Length: 184
Image (tube, rainbow, N blue to C red):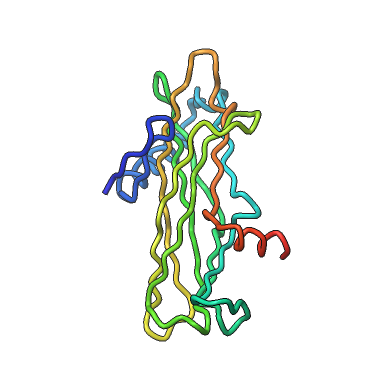
């Protein structure tokens, strides 16, 4: 399933076959003796926002101790590559997310939301979009995992290089969640 986002932020895809095929093609191309002309142009920097790399959810109410915790999730790492077209660069990103069941969780699934933002070198946000991710816990399991695969297309002006952009990823947190992350 491919869902299209704002034109400036490109598209988000969970179509693993297409993404893996592009990654494999890139890996095979890197094995050839011919130099890659795109390597000199650089790729956008892709990073996890440190203060938004983890999120905790609690059951409704005012309690916020361990017994009220329903789950906690973390964006573990990101990996990927980029490929140039005539007037754009496509960045393929794989992002594993893990979640831990909390003592207050009564369901088998929890939902989180993460963001993808494209910024320029001055940290100006050019585009941003939130994406949901559902974490499913197997019966008796204390952990769940999801592999999010993103395809980010950034239009390029002729005088701009892809390395002048950054792609920032993190959980979409409310004020309380962000405050807890800043304190820890």
